[in-house]
Length: 452
Image (cartoon, rainbow, N blue to C red; front, side):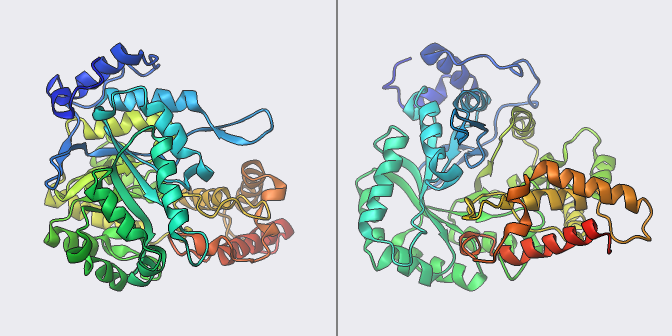
């Protein structure tokens, strides 16, 4: 394939099919075991970015959860072979938007993603990454510029399609991390030079902070903004941590700013729902996956440019491609049904962890995301022992303790938390992590002592 082909010409060759054929001709990606599986009843749904004309796949690949393996020294590293297989399948089925960040997978995501994508023509995909200068109270201009150039190096490119100021929750945070050190002026100049095609930010925080950042639109001309949006957070976001996505979407729609979506599954919680919620989904459509309902909800809003999914396993990628190939937006009746499901989901006392792993590594070795994931799983399965009078209490107690020990090694369990708080300041969901770990540990200790 001619590496100098333009993006427009490349897409004219045949859309998603051309991606698959071109990849095979250029670099011969390996066939996967799922290559013959049916994927939807049409081609990938694309959205046009009105500011740039980019034709972006509605399903975007969030590169925060690549599969990991152990190296010879026992260190967790990205499984590059699996990443290649996943990206090959994604591109063959029309996905062309890939979102990463310097802090993902403890610094390994950009390099692994860039290595895999570099096997394809640069014009055939969009790179989105971030400036994650979150360490230290007064990040410097030099540190920010170095991180930016590292991203270019990892992605083996001389330009970035979509570049975000990472995790900005208020005007004060923006001022501290990007204004006082002159970093925003540098990035605006990079955009003017064409090395950044679209400049925006990702947001976690309160409505006031969001409005402060939007008030800067006339000055900085945000090309796009990334928000957390799913059917629970649409009108039921925890006000202590986030803002209702309905409000965020409405404000961006008014300003005609393209939107990319993070956490459409709320860190996997909306693909692994309690049994009574799952039953209602299956009664409505027995052939649709629970996750597909969540993706269809978010994708049904026209200002959304791309919906990110961190697809670790091939079966997740296949299912999501089925949802977005021949995409069917929700009607008002289905949206009303999703509101009913959101109300049910809010009744369950799970920890609102999205498994982003920003809190890791813990200096005391605690596996924070896995502890929360195990606890949430038991709640969703209805397997939480409550007291000795409960039916099947003995069986549930044994099951909870046994699965906890299997999921989390002894030295990485919640009882090792000393409450230092280093994890809490990194959490984009503003979870009081030490408090939650200590609460779970007290509960587990009651189970061990059989005092519930």
